[in-house]
Length: 282
Figure 1 (tube, rainbow, N blue to C red):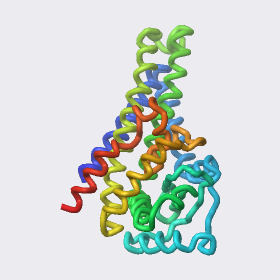
Figure 2 (cartoon, rainbow, N blue to C red):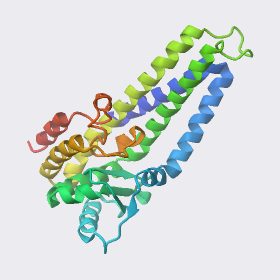
Figure 3 (cartoon, one colour):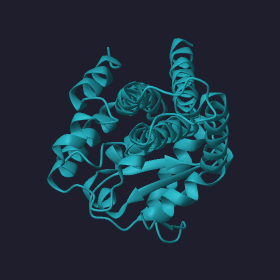
Figure 4 (cartoon, one colour):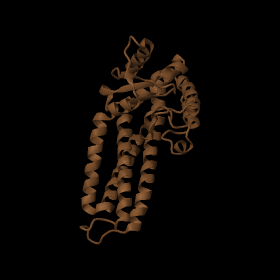
């Protein structure tokens, strides 16, 4: 319950930041525009985010005849987790990774790369798929999508604030005008703060998905081994088409080969994730 409360508070902070930034940019009218922008972006991300991200990575549906072993593992795990069978997609990438998407368990999608099917043993693949189904079970996909959307809207308004500061602050219709220096500071600090809040949301959900996935699989050993292999593989061969806006979806950071992206990683440190998984065996 505490994790749910913390996540709710962090999302509320993002929403408040967005509205305040809109107010700084355009007063009451700006706050209204910011609120409408957030509503529209969340509507689009709720209904279409799965199609967008699958198309972004060139993922194709894979049926049972094409990958009977993959379907068997997912069906077994979904039954244990009390979830409907998700749709399965294959990403044509040699970098081993996986993610889940979809607005709810009834519309869930689990996507795996061609590389992960070659690199992992069955027990390790089971651990990864259990982790992704845990995200579906915990409704993490919707939460992280909303967080990413709000953070993106804040960054967009921050860019607008920078231009507004350059051209004289807030609208002339706004009594008292605006302080260009304050606008510039807000434009610089707001995206950083939004990113930090988004990271807090994403990292917290990863820890929870690790624990839930280990319980669904029946043991944490497979996931531990998979995380070690995937981390090394993604450092050596980062996914070429990886987009920072969708990095939070993957089981390990697809940008981990890039120093700056690693500094602002949406994923907790590998060592801490593995330490917590070892603790589940105690």
